[in-house]
Amino acid sequence: MRFWRKKPETVPGSAPEPSGTPKEVKERRPSTPPVKGTKIRLFLHTPGRMARLLEVDLPDGEAAGDVSLRCFEPPPEGGGGDENTPSRAWKVDLTTEEVQRIRETASAIRLIPLGGRSRAGDGSTVEITISAGPAEARLKWWMTPPEGWSMAADLVESLRQLSGEEL
Image (cartoon, rainbow, N blue to C red; front, side):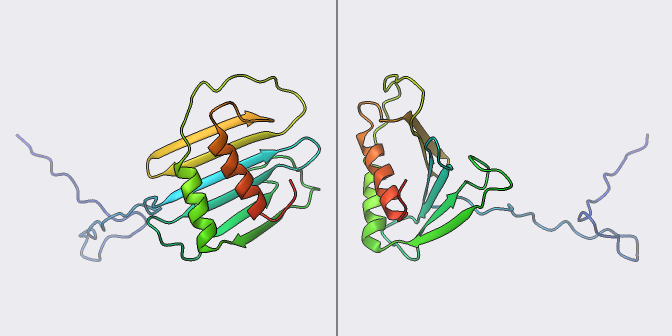
């Protein structure tokens, strides 16, 4: 009876040692660190204008540190522009008070999954995503938010004002 031994693994892209013994496998680390804090993404699209993306990462706890609102027009993933459309990106440094207000408003949002229906057509579409660790909530509406989503609308308006741009 013949027993087969599994060959030791080598690090991808490495050559065996001169003696023919492979290198030890190094511990692999995830390519991206685990998500910490809360990430808020606001996607706005108004007819006749380029789409806009506003993003902010809120750190865990009360610390504000260096927190910025990142603004993109059109969003990097595409949304309202073509190769001839100039893109703009800017950031707005947030004060501790602004960070705290955003955190409190986002924390006060309560999800009501069946918020009602509104007709689509000409008008603004709003989509906001809030992520914290493995949890994520995405709200989307046309023109005015459904009943019960007023805190989400308050957060959208706050981020719009902080971006410093008329939407």
